[in-house]
Figure (cartoon, rainbow, N blue to C red):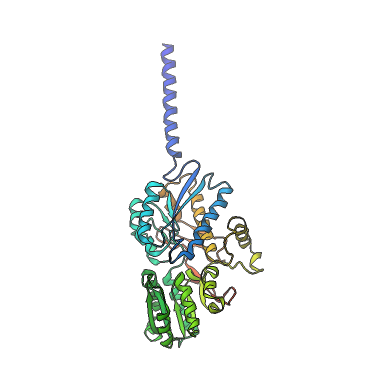
Length: 403
């Protein structure tokens, strides 16, 4: 009888221990793309093709993750950053998204490049319930949690940029004659819509020429010549990448020197303005969210010093005149903050839960500009300020404005 009771007691203890072990195992089991040692993050870049100037963003993100890994990773897990180059082709982006999700088994896609590419993969990502976070596109269409709860942008929208420029013109050059150049795509149309909304009832009279370009175009001189001949004295240059470089150069070489505005996506001195010519770029106006980092005074800021130390140690091959490095640094810093908030629950659902409850002060954002989100607000950054290029560096010209 005693033997039976002893055996029964051991069996009961074993059963309870087994149940507890299974529960603990279920609690500790990492999500898809996560092991005890790593977190797999997917990325689709545009390191070749018409937008290859933005490739340094991906390089900066990779360098930031190397720094995090050297410091022990995120809650003890190293980030495995898997980046594929789609050559600025949205068809490739669809194939790569499937590869990263279904073959590489990533936890999420991060900082995927381009409006068209992100639109092409958005339905798939939401169907699979895989986070598509902090996109390299400022299109307002990615702030749509009601229909696409797994997709989130990052910077202030194209529409908001166009709107802010319109308000500046109304205040400082109310009799302007405006020529507009934009890409013949969704992002280009959004810039123009923001400009027209900002000008309001005066848009029809003030915009004297509105032209577009296609990604297949090899020469923008016909468009620039037509805008010069329109008599415009303000040039809303919403072109991107190599088209921005070409249009600045064309305007100068044709002897047309209007007050020129360019998008935030095109403000990198190293990637776009230097190839156009610094003298030819002098005077252009853009917008920013980040601190400057070139001046002696700027280097007194702890966040700027940390950025410069990171550049020296982890991204030394990149140009300090390339603003894309700051953009990549900021996005990567925001993603790491989300992952840290997840703790040991690195499920895709919890990633989105944490990404939709942010209130962050990133180290390189200008004071007063924060990353804020909610379950109904998928636009993390909602402020900007205007800057002007003096031929050497960008100089702030106005206060922070909100969308």
